[in-house]
Image 1 (cartoon, helix red, strand yellow):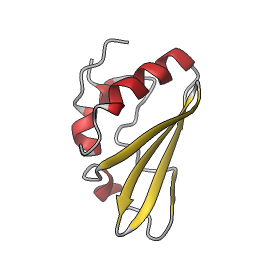
Image 2 (cartoon, rainbow, N blue to C red):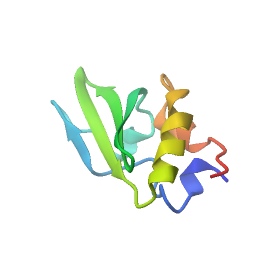
Image 3 (cartoon, rainbow, N blue to C red):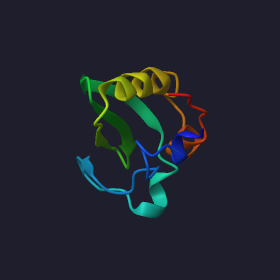
Length: 94
């Protein structure tokens, strides 16, 4: 299944819920943003960090399923430098 279609992560790319230093991306721009870092803060919280117009933007995704969040984190670690749209095209089997 494509990451973008997985019911535990939809909608993808995330178009709201950004915390930014500086400007906040609009919904149309989000898919083109490049993943700079991905962090896991608790077993069920992911933070996606992107650079946007010279400032940091962080999208926080809380998951009900900690195992899913850890698996997603492991998959996304290999996606640094990819656009959020490209990440949505990843095949996941968890």
